[in-house]
Image 1 (cartoon, rainbow, N blue to C red):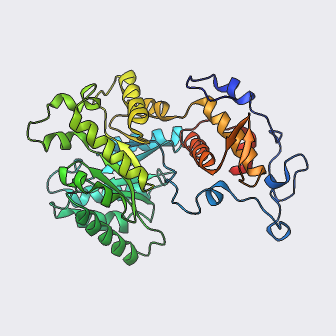
Image 2 (spheres, helix red, strand yellow):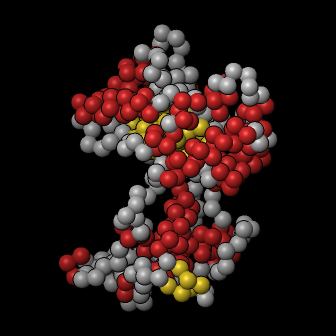
Length: 376
């Protein structure tokens, strides 16, 4: 199957992929005779030369990108967070939810607001444990209280914390250190990821250094605060399309954020779209962010934006089928270079196609059954 830039019909594409394993057969511990030997899963004690999983075989010398949902939906009130949790339960973990302490809490009610979000994170309504929270920035003393509550009262189900308005790499380091100490005090066995909003000129200046910090999982562009920080030099029109993809300073910021993130296996997250009920505009913005800048994730500020963002950030159906074919053939060759459809493929190609499969799963796409069975 050749690569195609056009979106093919899903079923036509999937039927064109050779089925190495019948759809009703799973890959358990017993070897399957009609599967290439290197793709058989057998008991470890009997498997003298097991095929390495792509995550092991292809990323031994570099850090892979985190496998995250392509959409992050933010909400501040208990009512809207409850609606988001119900939508997530209906759709599956195709988007993350961020409880907003920064803009969601009334002045003086920061502590109770953080407690409300922590209770929702700890609740049975958080079916997939994919809910995080945005705390205040370092200029507001409530940020430490919020972090302590969210880490200590979320039943260890907090997915991440988001830091807004960092001004330097030292700001981010300070928050990471505080989070680590707080997690240790509360008996966490895993690190808590930090998502860093790049929305000040100082953070943009330090973006490469921020991206290298252990614990940083995403870099999120905050366009409105970034525009505001220029004190009128950038028109408000640059907050929305087409200006957000044309103004030189905004284009520069997006490119630097995406480049820093991707160079350090951090997920670049695109800013919000202000068009709340214009699905086509949301889709177009997400598609431009992906194709022109390499953003792999995007913020949503209204439930109607979630589906068009996911749709825009899905890989091409034909490319998913091609990725499955290449990776199955590569695994059968134990990840050595292969000749496929009269073209050469090597580990660089395999890493690319593995990310295609990972993105397909993260956006709810159906993966060819042979690849699903072999790799997942």
